[in-house]
Length: 627
Image (cartoon, rainbow, N blue to C red):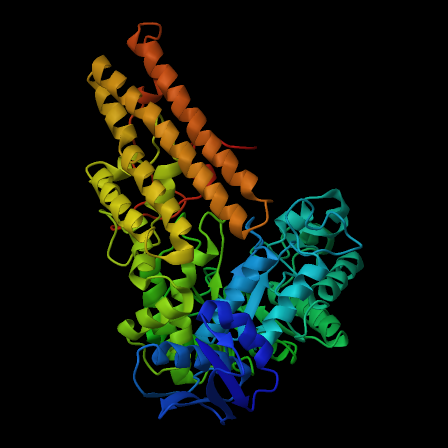
């Protein structure tokens, strides 16, 4: 379809041209005419009597309205659509510090989808994955972005009406940056900077400059969350015990002043103040007490970001927004698209928490929100598997309440994917034995993929659950999804293969143990044959995952998952050998199968309805991977 945009189009045509491929349109002087008008506080899309009109306030509203216009025009009838933006900024924060560093082309792809959704804010969360010229070991071999790469992303975003804001850490979460010897003088604990030292502030100054230079935005997120050991490492040795509120405020004041001198407007995660005021160290402690003098000592140029991915009750969010306002300004709210749950997104928790949180934000007048998409423990889940969560955030940005049917239609138009298929990814972790919605953050798919067949640390948890049948059915559903999701077919092809592997592996350890306990050598040999097939299937899964990763991310970081898959393949081969030795009489007993299968209950409590909450090093073995 050819269209001709006339009217108030200044600064919009270049961005529209970037979206032509996604929209299936061409800009042409001979095309159907659409008049573009600037309208205060609203966006609209109209078509009647052969004439099109688009109304917009901010550039991002134009791109969403352009998508709405094309979407409705293709239905073949006249239409009139109007929406009122609910937030000034609404967007996403993508974790590129836990191995999966998106390529520039992938960032551009994400930006185009965001523009059609109407999201106008993007942060790439970089701990050490951006280059600092004076510190060559900062981000070394981690896929760090060059200034030119970040500038290319920002240039592209600007054409689409999207603000890119640098997002770094200036206190904690710096384990990878601080592991090298250059950092010996600035390291308090393995992941926290040594505050109060001039060498530390020289590093931070270079971080601020390098992180902000490629971007137009003068805002910067400087982190400072989850510094649990603040003041308790080398700082304690040097200065003795000091009130941690004082340490936090002094450091924040220093860094905020440095940011201000560079013309930057800083924001930080708010949790440390609430944690320090809590007797239990909890961020979400309703009894937390933050003294008035601490609030008075907070820098005036800092905005606080309230992050909360956990609560399904809007009243809790309302209360905590009010508590943040006591700091002297309206907070930014950060919710979560649960891409960090394991090897598939947790959409049950994503939807429940997002609905409650954004309803509260609207009621309390919060003007800026964004969805975090973390990549904890190796970034096993692709960012793009979380697109349905971004669409949910987007639709909340233009309506008081979201209708699921309209949400699904918008998702199909903006991304080319099927909303129901993306939500079905939730079933990798919402299995038999897991409570509806998976609000306890279970991740059985991750646990069952990486656990050892002979040791079976989670076998005590899954005994009696029909997981093999569950994943066998899911395999068929994912295979169907892999044929009808356009550019996301490879993503669903990977998940179809994952379901196939889990159908064969999920109950394997239980079956091995049962056959061994019966001294059923023939049964063990049959299982040994199945494991030969499973090795081939797991290797195919590795290859599909590799292809998916390398199509979207830099190569650095994939080696971690290659090693994990290699561990699965190697241990299955060892299990085959152990069975051969036992059934042939060369081995008197298989030690691993002699052990009783205990219920796995660490490091988090396992409430009823929870099934697996763990990271790789505690899933694969009970022995230390390094010590």
